[in-house]
Image 1 (cartoon, rainbow over the protein chains, first blue to last red):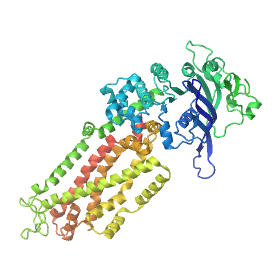
Image 2: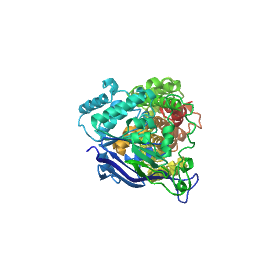
Image 3: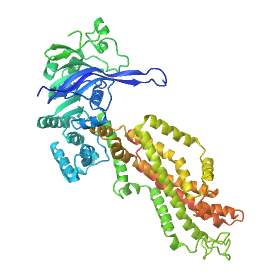
Image 4: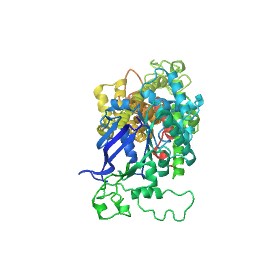
Length: 326
Length: 308
């Protein structure tokens, strides 16, 4: 049961068409946001995706939640192919999978009360017949996420809450339908550092209590290491390394993973830190470079890297990396 | 970056909470609204008009339709505050009773225009794509058509009457509100909370009703008031040109009659000045209110973006 294949993604790809300014005719060019990504999330585990901004991790989350249509590929939830689910089927499925958003300021409608926000999913799904039951459930959820369940709280609006409190409201709303699979898109990246730990601790506590499975997106390696069971590193739409959390941090195989780990500032200042970090940003590839996408920035790159795309290969029981020079 | 980010959000929040107050409990808009002197003056002016017009039967000194043969074209006096018409009708009493018609047509037609514009704007802005394309093109076409000649043709074709005026105004007038609502909807639907609603499994109607409409309510209300001005002016114009409802005399009709009876030629200023002034003053009063609402309660892109 523990190792059941819970959520699977198979060759998932998303290209966004872009038109140049003033271009009306001709073929659009495409941004390869997510390119041929494969992974399996296991029940009760936390699957982390790490990468820089623009590497396609948010697009991946949006595709999982059916907010974006994949260009090709398949998604399986509990063995069932959900890629082509229509609106009605998807609505039923959304009871089991919910999303926690990155931006606790923008993801809650400032016009609505906390009660309305938390109760929105149960209203959309017509769970309760009367408002009293609904109110009790909302209060229960607020307590679950560590907020007050007073009437005063229920009538507050998001603008009256702090960032951490808002994110707790977001989590309460995501869990009210009893979802088991939570897609969390950088849930703490916009919060103050002191509050992050609280929210992460809350999410981990809820995971234990409700046996949740997380798909956790972050750009911080330290965060991923602390809470994820398995970590995938994405670069420019491709997964470059996938492994168990301990293995990937202690023995990174891919040079990009090494870069991300080196980029974590040490708590005790080190005069050598930052000296050998390579430069450059994740490019939006409209025309991906031939071969390995990382080769323009890579120190190990040679002729092979420029011509041949490396495949994800299992190097050490379940530690996959896509590099020619491991 | 995070700092300036927070400031932007707070700024947006305060603007938003202002607009919440505008649509929340019945009189919650007042504290913000009263800060505008012009707005308060406009409100008082419209209040006086509405008060006088509703109580017209009790305030009027004469029967507005009674033709007094002994008092034709008499200048203002204590028995006839605003004098009499060429037919011997009391101008003051006519003014009050005609106001009912003018105001009623104004509010009814403005309401219909606003409703139509809002619905079309919501559909075009929310669904986008081909639907938006078609509706926007129709609006563009209506917008470039010369307004008055088209109205005259339509009014002449449909025959004079109140419903004709309302119909003509609605058919030609929805474009402005539709454009503004569409623009607001297009910026609203980018919000993450719309995305969140989708990820919950909410349908389009739910999203529009709960997440989009409250955000465009400010534009809708402000435009409704401004539309009242336009409609009252248009009604006056159409009536003055003879396309009004002969059975229901409005201020425009009073001007039409004054023109017909030669009041302009013979210097009977008391016959045309009061209705003309009423149209102008009521229009100004509505503009004051509409512009105040627009300034204080409508979210604008520059407010959302502009931190410093």
